[in-house]
Figure 1: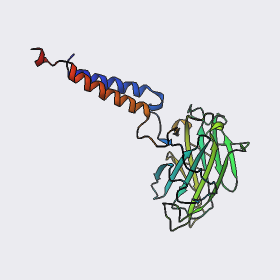
Figure 2 (figure 1 turned 90 degrees about the vertical axis):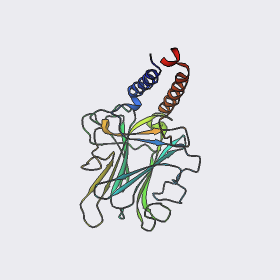
Figure 3 (figure 1 turned 30 degrees about the horizontal axis):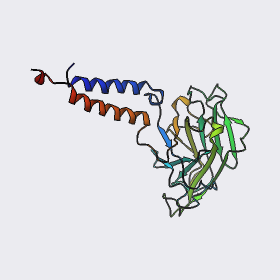
Length: 264
């Protein structure tokens, strides 16, 4: 085997292994990596209570074709997962928003009993799937799940001069099934708009949605990854490990495998 060919084979083999891992399959949707918070937990009052409250959270910024934006922030404290939904372009508190979890991360075309949604409008409600549709069906609200909505302004980095809609959620990790795990994740956000009574529905991942109570198939949801680290990783750890190993192997082999000219 030539000196030039062997490193290429090492890299190719590694990429095949990565592609075969479930967490990095080509069909996986977008992922949100949720860091562990070392600072005080958020006060779930529906607003940016202070400028530092969500400063160490992961941030996902979503742009929609109508010019609307949605910001998703998330972090955890080993006990609870905290999620902030912020719509900088929505100034009227007249809609509702929800977060959904595929607790077994088993996808599928329909919502099942292991798929939980927490939707906040005038009140907080919990929904599960029935295994036959993508509609949410009412379930008993877990007493440890909390949420609040309100208007944020000066303490938010987005539209600090305008009061705009924010939702805050707190969900026990134990209720989702594990302290450290990956879950399918979906966000819905509904508003009546600023000047009309027409209802606008938004989602993450960004799919056209008829209402906040009908979701897309769980197989098309994104993913939320609960990390024990306080920092959001640039790459998933198995990928980092492989890259580091591959670079090391290639470096060693290119020094130790003799070239044709050396043999002659």
